[in-house]
Image 1 (cartoon, rainbow over the protein chains, first blue to last red):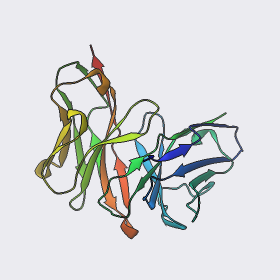
Image 2 (spheres, each protein chain N blue to C red):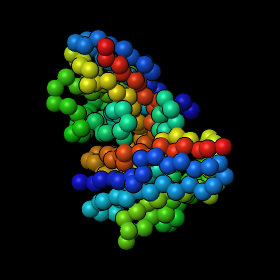
Image 3 (tube, one colour):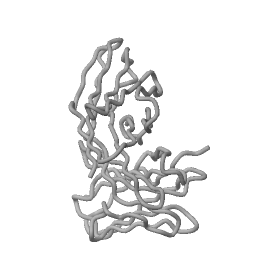
Image 4 (cartoon, helix red, strand yellow):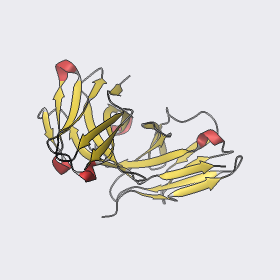
Length: 114
Length: 116
């Protein structure tokens, strides 16, 4: 049973480019969460999605960041016009449709902005 | 709003000695609490969880944590450290979201160093 799959593991972009991070949840999991980890810090919640719906995006920056979880395919975190401060590790987690179940994390995408 | 404070950013122990990682939380209602471990360049692995059942929770790899409501604490312990325990540990509190989701709030992390 494959875990949460994130790709790419490492992504390098120049300032002004777009970054697309992908996440495939565990089989049977319908809830997807994105978190950001800045260097030497804990993870910070960004957004919570179910299929075709954004449920809570209270942790998303107001500009340049968007997320989707289409009916078919992985969840995508998209960052437009990246800046140096976007450099971080971005983690995806998934859980089954039961609020008491813990979230399972992928290995993350490490985004570096040149 | 919920919050988590990990009282030590770094802990150094000798192999075979006990490990104690301290965590205090604030929550407006009965929380769900977790400890996750993160090895370098890896994702987070769940060590254990508390969800209002027994206050002493046993997890994987010999770790356990005790929920103390009066002290709002959820400290993580292991009686005998192993070299493979060197990692970063996060105390986490869960906040219920609509549509049966959960928003995790993380402590700042405690980096554990195990000396031979």
